[in-house]
Length: 171
Image (cartoon, rainbow, N blue to C red; front, side, top):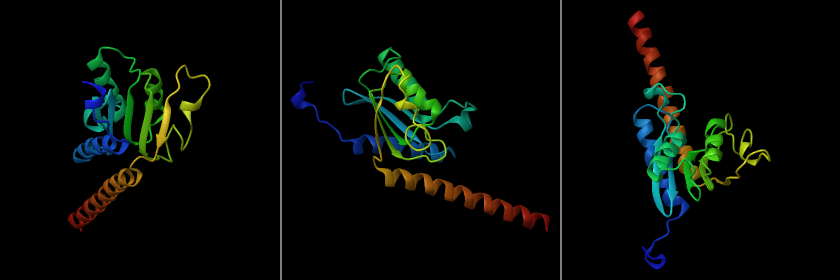
């Protein structure tokens, strides 16, 4: 397709696709994190959190998206690909972005406890890394943060209701 016929999408557009995947994770009672990998204005990898239901501690949205993208292009090096993820990546995922040679990370909500890009530690800015990933945080931050807050509020309410129900059964 010629450059003139190719519509370029905004960061917000791609993040909206990641938010849809995060919602799918929430429906499975997984922490709602979604990721899409975009190459040449096309999604080549998608992922949503799945460690609980898959019994796989590495089944984070970013890792799943990286695996799918690498399979699609038949190369583990995703040079010139960008990733959009609803939550700041953890150390495992940040390392995987480096190994995958992702060009640019766009993330939504910061993760104060375990964010390994800007919030807690900054793995992507280490001089020892053999590849530098560009970073833009805060893309659709309010929507991403609200999605996470709503999920955890719902989970707390469900746990409280379960405790009350168990107490009633005992009494």
